[in-house]
Image 1: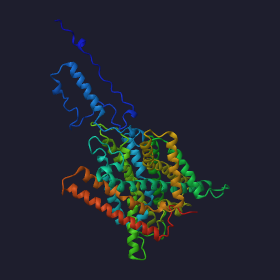
Image 2: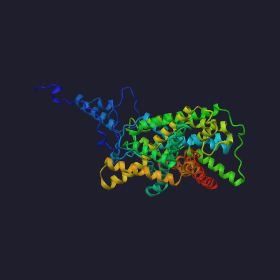
Image 3: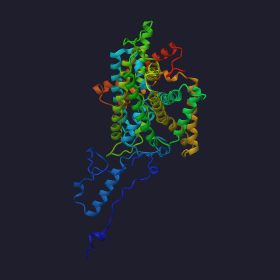
Amino acid sequence: MEERPETELISIPATPRASTPEILTPSGQRSPRKEAGVSTAKSWTPTSFISPRFLSPIGTPMKRVLVNMKGYLEEVGHLTKLNPQDAWLPITESRNGNAHYAAFHNLNAGVGFQALLLPVAFSFLGWSWGIISLIIAYFWQLYTLWILVQLHEAVPGKRYNRYVELAQAAFGERLGVWLALFPTVYLSAGTATALILVGGETMKLFFQIVCGPLCSSNPLTTVEWYLVFTSLCIVLSQLPNLNSIAGLSLVGAVTAITYCTMVWVQSVSQKRPPSMSYEPISMPTLTASFFSVLNALGIIAFAFRGHNLVLEIQATMPSTFKKPAHVPMWRGAKVAYVFIAMCIFPVAIGGYWAYGNLMPSGGILNALFGFHSHDIPRGLLAVTFLLVVFNCLSSFQIYSMPVFDSFEAGYTSRTNRPCSIWVRSGFRVFYGFVNLFIGVALPFLSSLAGLLGGLTLPVTFAYPCFMWVLIKKPAKYSFNWYCNWILGWLGIAFSLAFSIGGIWSMVNSGLKLKFFKPN
């Protein structure tokens, strides 16, 4: 019998690796094709059996089929359960994030107006305890950040795209919601409200500086400036998903680094007030001193917010066995927190060096305006305040995204269809004006950094340690086991203490604290 050429028996073209549209893969398990020269991990994958040794005795056509199948399976990645609803929600709608986006988002969420309050904490703690507390808090939260990044895909076949989902996996369905939902929503919505207050008041000061004493126009009231700032936030919030605000996060990161640097450089370059001292602020009673220290530690804890957004940021990235999402996420987070350290440590140390125990409760920006408004050129002050406004506008978007996601998740689960552009816009307009109403009703909220830090401290310092023990299950009584349990319970104890200190400080001041003193 005449043999036919091998090419006539079968001809199997290589399978093209074109990416599937995002809407067809809502869990985001597709990723760009592997680049040449990138080393692969030695761990087991579903295609480990397709090795050169296995393929050696097989003829060319069958070998080609198996090689193509191996490439497809490696591109698809691990077999994660698909949730069609993910393709409709703002956090998981787009899965094309990368390390650059992670750095922008983490930096925008991690640096903000709360860093300007750190010198206030130093004025109660002094040099030694202030620096020690800041260093411990920085490395503690860096460790819990690493934990959250690793736990994003801790269970094979499951991605925990939201902080509450990971809490449910660790603590149980009901307990996880009770423990995590309130502090995360409170942190997102409370921060958004504080940003409206800070942004509106900064816009008012910017107008006063630019307009000057000879301005003949009728200035807007503080509440009207809140309304202007809220309107700008609502316009920017129409961007559909978390990846779409990467440009805004870049603007927020750049402006935060710039104005933090400008503020501490301008402060240390000016002559210090003659009556200042580096002795911690003395209180009339021992009890008052104790609660003041607790409130100061709460301010330091509040400076390291943003962990409620870590899983959400990581959820915007594709993930496969060869390229898991935690690799670019951790790379971007490390870069971001280097810049965060370059902002918060100089602001805290430089601000306390420049003003000592004369630091007003509003923070270093308030001190700069109060002590040196006539010494610094108006243009430089105006630029500083304008950068604060830009940063507040950018931070509002990333902190509001989890709330937008919750609104739309409730709508899509009931209607089984994605939100239309009108429904999505309605949710965001409603959310913006609710925060405006809360800010007008509680205008002292922006000064309650100690209370906010105490109430939301478990999200950053405590819960991740418990989650690691409950999900990863390290050997009982090992160093890892002891370390995480101790850190977790210390975080809970500090949360209770700092919250009490924040409440005492608020009541003791008669609810008169404000981020900026009204004119």
